[in-house]
Image (cartoon, rainbow, N blue to C red; front, side, top):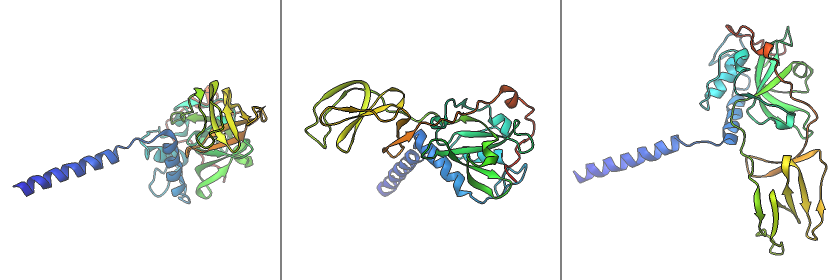
Length: 265
């Protein structure tokens, strides 16, 4: 009897641990990484208009399948997906991994006809990569700079929550790697170590170096510091390319059937 009771207790504990593991809640950045991993894992899967998987997809069925992997349900058509989430305003620098990209159709670039998932902007801030499924080549990664997609890019929708940004700190303490740093107060900023300097983040992504001698060196106003999901910092140039805003008329067309064209032939 004691042996049976012990077995039951151990079984319950194992199931409880498994349940906690299965119910792990991912942060937005981790969700976005998983989203892209799931999409790229299907690289080469062929396109077929109206197909919903698992061996072939059209473009909105593909994005729907990928977002469903992380528990987000999207509508069936590209037109209805273009109404999900919220519009992302600003420039390419303001887009984040996992954003839904909206493109015009092959025969009518002003009409919603294709969707993809944003991966990342390049080092110039004026180009970006995305994953989608196309008529020729199936699931693949392409770039905005390719003429076909550049001339058909209609806008961006934020489906995932915004990535968490560092909160301002009223006090920046002496950094542990260098006891010579004096305790300084920098209201409404965040600071971190970068070599022999202290990097202070200001509003709007602006930043400056504070050297050991106390000099403040401001880099180009056309750059900003971003916090990567792995905890590292990266400077990127601000993009001059504006994100187009979807016109209401383009998103309110009849969406009773899939309208995607699969991208470039």
